[in-house]
Amino acid sequence: MIVTPAQKQAIRRSWELVKPIADTAADLFYKRLFEIEPAARTLFAEDMTPQKKKLLAMLAFIVKSLDWPDETWREQVDTDDDLFLVVLALGRRHADLYHVSDASYDSVGAALLWTLDYGLGEAFTAEVRDAWTRVYGLLATTMKMGKCAVGDGTVVARPAAARREVSGT
Image (cartoon, rainbow, N blue to C red; front, side):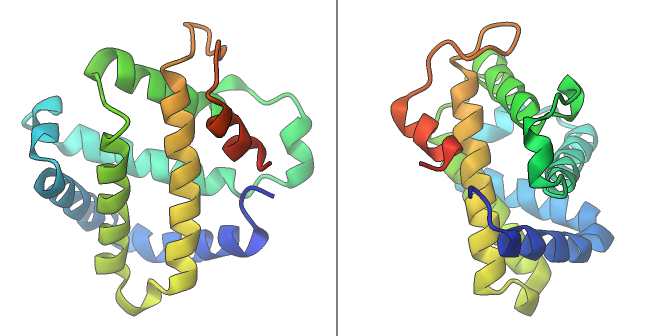
């Protein structure tokens, strides 16, 4: 299994704690990201309000997607609700429009974990850290695969390591 039920639960529980401080969490995230990778600041408009809303909406979408029962992963899903296709397309846009390097995903992951740690305090346990690290790793891998996707979202070539990571083998 890619993400265990315990990891899903840890993320859902911690997200409930983030929601009341979501605006502060978004501020902290971008502040930390720009400290880690100052060049990233040039990729964003001066007014970060819309970007912060996008970040929070994407995180909420990811957490919501964890609630899908395992058996529904084989069913037809609307493209806008398919986590894999949404994240794949997001990665393609980041590569095509913003020329985001693969190394930048490490900075984003570090900023996300730092934000959760700072924002959640003692509630950011090792279990919660491991769960968010796992989910972010899968998302980052999928986004990196996005640069191999063509306009309709079809992946034309997946690196072998990425195929193994997403399939769990």
